[in-house]
Every structure is written in structure tokens, then in C-alpha cells.
Image (cartoon, rainbow, N blue to C red; front, top):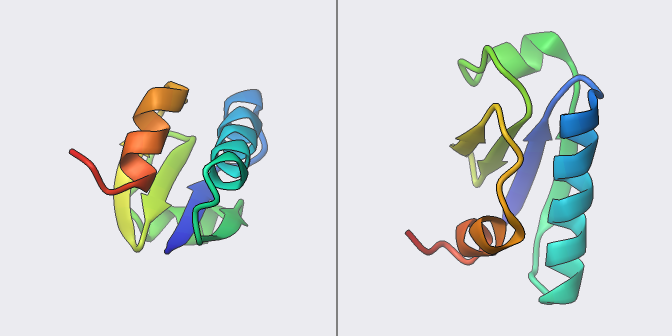
Length: 79
């Protein structure tokens, strides 16, 4: 699984990255996590509001920091 956190470094972006890294470690999820802060790269996803979470090239969250439960569900591929 490839996880991308899209954001320019705002508090929400940093919070999302921290939460994703914590959940991946806690639940031993096999994932590569990348932080994307370049505006040009972010815009390629059609994102106009950060933070955003991309899992395997699918945008799953935009403009907020989901709860731990929601993040775990997203990372496990649940609906």
C-alpha cells in the first residue's frame, strides 16, 4: 500500500501525517508513507484544500483530519 499525505505543512497536515504514521505502526500495516508538499504535485490530484489523504492513488479524504477509527477503516480498505 502506498499512502500519500498531501499538504503544505499546516497544523492539520502535520496532524494527519502523525496520525497515519501512528496507526500504520500500531496495527502493523504494510505501507509506504510519503508526504507531498509541492503545490504542483498536490494540484495534480485536483486538491484545492489540504490536508488530503491518498491511498494507492485514490483520494480518500480532503480538507480534514479523520478520526483514528475512520483512518483505520480507510487504511484497511473498508467502506
